[in-house]
Structures are given as structure tokens and as C-alpha cells.
Image 1 (cartoon, helix red, strand yellow):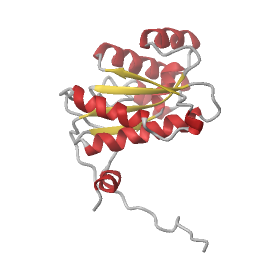
Image 2 (cartoon, rainbow, N blue to C red):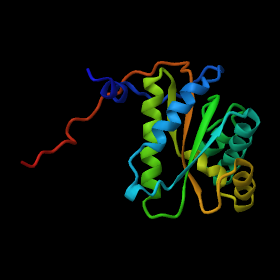
Image 3 (tube, rainbow, N blue to C red):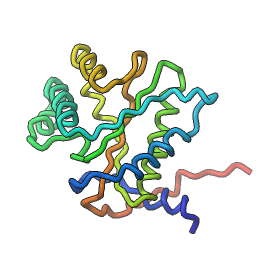
Image 4 (cartoon, rainbow, N blue to C red):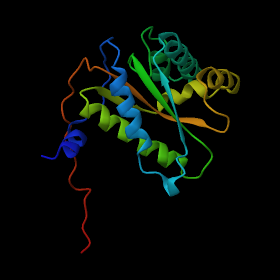
Length: 185
């Protein structure tokens, strides 16, 4: 089978990581795959923030948990009150993908995020495509502080993230629906 297709078909969302940091060489290849993603009119409406600082990841997790607590429903409270809660699944590396106000920025960011996940799998790393972490940015005052600390440029907003690391689990391949494919010839 073609290596690229194999990487797409075998990639799984990893939610448990070893603590070992990923090699810089692999991180650079993953970022290269991101900037080569399809982009509307080549506007490249994205910005990438690589976080390997444990304190910053904890700060983002706390901000997301604070938002979950404000939601007040039982499931959100249970997650927020879990002392091990991390929207990044405690991965040693997280890349936040932010988009500007271009109308297709979110799609561009999604393409880059998927490229990173496939590249990570091809390099033998685990990844998870994330969006719920954006709850950390819901409070405007907290968001302003986080955006500044993360160096996210003005005019950009976090859209997605990728958690990266060595997988500490091997999820089974879920069954895929085939009834979603239709041909018009």
C-alpha cells in the first residue's frame, strides 16, 4: 500500500501519552507538513504556536476547566474537577493553530491540523486533533493574557490544536460507515 494512504488509514486519536518529549527533527517535519496544507487562494491564514512548557499547558488546562465549571452541567463539572484534567491529554507537545479573520481561515487551519496528524503518524508519533481547548479563551480577560503569553498575533484566534507525543495506548480501528459514499456517473 502507498505510504501516504497507509498513514491516513492507520492514524488514530491518541489520548494517552508517554512523558518523553518528541525529537525536534520530527517536530520540524510536522510543522513543515502544516505549512504545506491546502489553503484558500494561498492566503495561509494561520499561525502556529508550539508549546512544550508544562506550566503553560497546565495554565491552559486550568483556564479550560474554569470555563467548564461555569457551564454547570454534571459532565462538565466532573471533567473540570478531575485533578488530572487536560484538554491536551497530558501530551508533552501541543501545537495551537490560530486563524485570522479571512473567511476561509478556519478551513485552512483544519487542513493544516489534519496534515500535522497524518505527518505525526508517519513519523511514529501519536496525535489528537483538538478543539475543546478553545474554552480556555472564552473569558475575554483570560484570553487576552493567554494570547499575549503565547505570542498569538493580534487578529488571530485559536481554532484547533494538535497534541503530540509517543502513544501510551493503541486504540482499535473503529468500524467505518460505507453507506455515506454515493456515485453520480
